[in-house]
Image 1: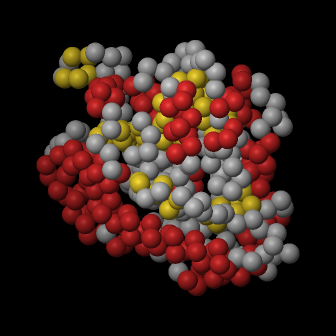
Image 2 (image 1 turned 45 degrees about the vertical axis):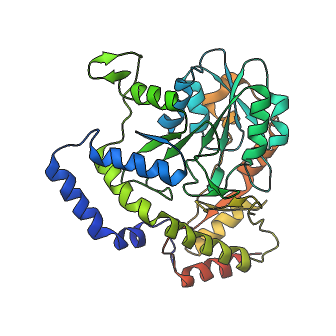
Image 3 (image 1 turned 120 degrees about the vertical axis):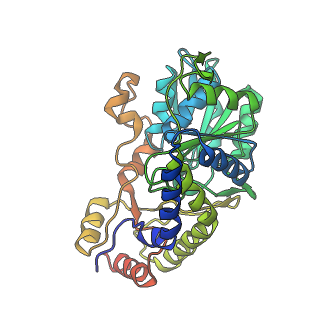
Length: 365
């Protein structure tokens, strides 16, 4: 049996007629930027997240960059981020000229460990970016308390966590602002690149909307040195259709995860866990093993496609060599990078395929 790491086919088959109809509708309107579909999606996604404002943009990296720009974070400033996340989180900080400060994760959730944040705060710290990694929210009450005590902004990187809950509240409503990615592989994915900022901060929303549109608050009137990062009409139209189905799709992912959690019994495989405060949406199902190379080869030989999120921690990437952070300085991020494997996880994967993955893993010695 051959099982892909991800497949969009079951999801897209269900909504194929709606997608094609919407494509024709947008095509015939001949209005492709800043139109009705974007306006409606922004309203619907803000409401979905439990926030007041949503600003569509080009991608998830842009979303974080725009938030940092909106809060005037720049050269000389520091932003605390997890040591264990995708490099886009750090790049957004670098793009505004600030310095990313890496804080180690909790090994149970893989998210930033709030107990380690305060010792990383300096007089230059301006914000904390809390990443909801793999689909599970970070411990936001603890993070918000630390931020309030130290007069810091809290930014959610919710690129992998569309629809997940923290103590009953949606991610995107838990900090000062949040950045979302709608990359096709996300739980809520466009058919191309797309992103959004969600916030309750009216002034921030207005500034981000202008900065993302060449710094313009009205046509040919430029109040900032802006950029071009806009959600286009077609992607917004597709996202509106998908948003209606997101909770159902997330529920199915939770069921798949529960089957993995119950079924995988191999003692050499460390399974993920769900925090008491969280409703995990399982963007990724990530296990760990000390013998990853052998395990990966074994799964591939049995037709099971996997991915590693992520094989090299940010502080050891060439892009951040100027920080001169030596190997061994962030041991948990390094340990995770050496051991993690993401198993097939997608809406529509069959019980037969799930059971095959489980059986194959349990048979590994």
